[in-house]
Image (cartoon, rainbow, N blue to C red; front, side, top):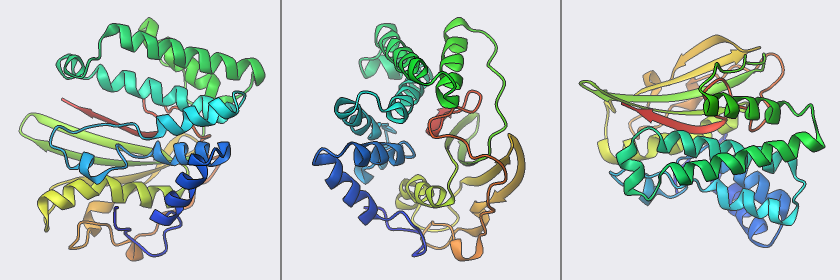
Length: 266
């Protein structure tokens, strides 16, 4: 498992182990929370993270589906799953050759789009004012119709970004969340494959934390300036400012960006 960057972190390997055990035993709350946390990761397997083919495994999907099987009216699980399906669509649309090599095509993307739309619709039928579902379905419809994106609501959140590039090629990964402990935890997983490959400074990445208050960026922290010899941020000298304003609801998209993990390259 990934070694934690700081003892002060609230999310540990033991946290995930306990949630996984409770979820496997049929607990819908544990399954939903495990799924929500795993939304922050490209994969929960170091082996997959180190694969040079850059695999995404969406470890959250099975647990969000398990939560919904046990409790079909769980609106949060539905919104989270819908958002991850949309992120999958966007990922496979980055590179058609990559998608085709993994058995993905327009048919599989339409299937995901239809399921995401149904999940958002189901949530809005039960709670018409659910902000994440309203934003999610509006964004999904805008993508489907190639229309303008809906205006972002003034929520507050963190955006962690890791950028790498060589020549004309660029690669970026990001995590959006509203909790600093999740920033630290997700950061250790983002950096794990980099540290494993490079092994010592300089690590050749741009690692930045953006803080948004009421929808506006008000703080930028260059975490790559504080990487230790093991490739992890020195959290003892990094202060993550608290969010001002209403935190972004779980599963709520931010423009074209997704709650949790997403990536892009080109």
